[in-house]
Image 1 (cartoon, rainbow, N blue to C red):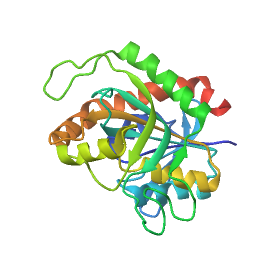
Image 2 (cartoon, rainbow, N blue to C red; image 1 turned 90 degrees about the vertical axis):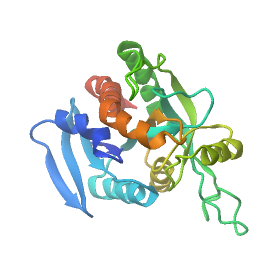
Image 3 (cartoon, rainbow, N blue to C red; image 1 turned 180 degrees about the vertical axis):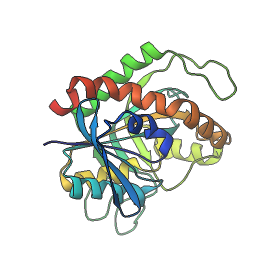
Amino acid sequence: MERLAILGALHEEIADLLAAMDPGATIHRIAMRDFHVGTLWGTPCVIALSRIGKVAAAATASIVIREFQVSQVIFTGLAGGLHADVDVGDVVVANTLMQHDMDARPLFGQHEIPLLGRVQFESDAALSKLLHDSAQDFVRRYGAAGDPAGATLAQPKVHAGLIATGDIFVSHNDEAQALRKRLPDALCVEMEGAAMAQVCYEFGIPFAVMRVISDRADHAAKTDFTAFLEKVARVYTAGILAPLLKSGALSAA
């Protein structure tokens, strides 16, 4: 039986998914993590809270692949916008991911993963397209989200491109500007995706990463992230994934 893994770094990012699992779901406690195994909208799934950061994400991805024999992995959650075209409330689906804080020079090139000979990891094209198309349908239905101050954001857009990952919560203008200068193609920055991607690449498991932009990775990031997490993140995740799981599209990807 093929099983999909859905991972998130914070409880709010996966809360509605856990609530929607069939009553017969079981919980397996491994390495201080709870792995919820059951059926979600008709699709066999294991859902887990990875916790924050690259090591936590890599450990969780390794467990779901080895212990639960998953056939695909999706990581979902929030991110800080980097690119000028990416606004708060937008959705970014990765086609590639990289670790912006990996630097083993002079032994290896900047950002190159030692002994793998690569800087970026490509997400599964079919899986990512399904997420991208479902996200577009969702933002058309859902419309504009509210920001923490109660104002209405612009109509959300869906982007596909490079996501940068690092063990840094980018929350200062200078840090964000430095990343934009060094990685002009990066759409957003987060703390787990590329580590999970490396694990999936090494195991040969198809994966995809979907992020909702909660802030602009600047001085207001902490406040914006917290409010967006509580009010919007869970709505996006469940709203985008539900049609794919109900239709069985992910199983066929």
